[in-house]
Figure 1 (cartoon, rainbow, N blue to C red):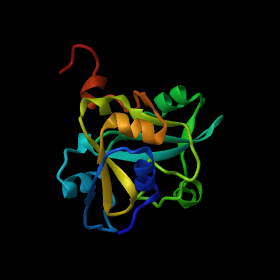
Figure 2 (cartoon, rainbow, N blue to C red):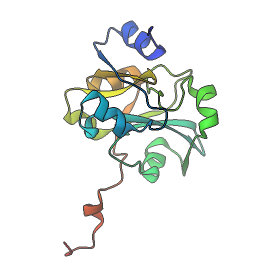
Figure 3 (cartoon, rainbow, N blue to C red):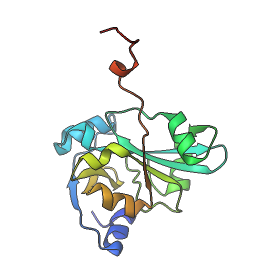
Figure 4 (cartoon, one colour):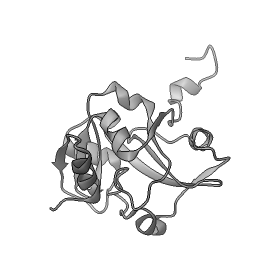
Length: 168
């Protein structure tokens, strides 16, 4: 496979990275399947979600495949009152990427972009390289630079964190 927009951007910025390729199963494009295929824990493999804010338009969130996005947190940090997922049919025209191959790096236009703050706990994380079947592995700080993003708390609390006080 040739270079994607994401890899060209990384090269242009002089950012070091590694590429991991995997077999694509069109029936299962989940991030958990990708993590399994490239041999990384799901907390270290990040998915890219594109949402639409009521004030800003498109907003990008990058978070571990093992987590769910807290849309209220993303809305607040991005200056919106509410955000909703961008319809899949609009993903290619807005970002230049397909579902299952959407990278936070090298989109058609720069959008407000946020990376889950826990990314910095790892020396290296994985995100889509801009095509199904290929991931790029790089330092979280380098990803932030390449996506021109900010760190933010983006994930919903774990189920254990939502239990009423004093309950196991």
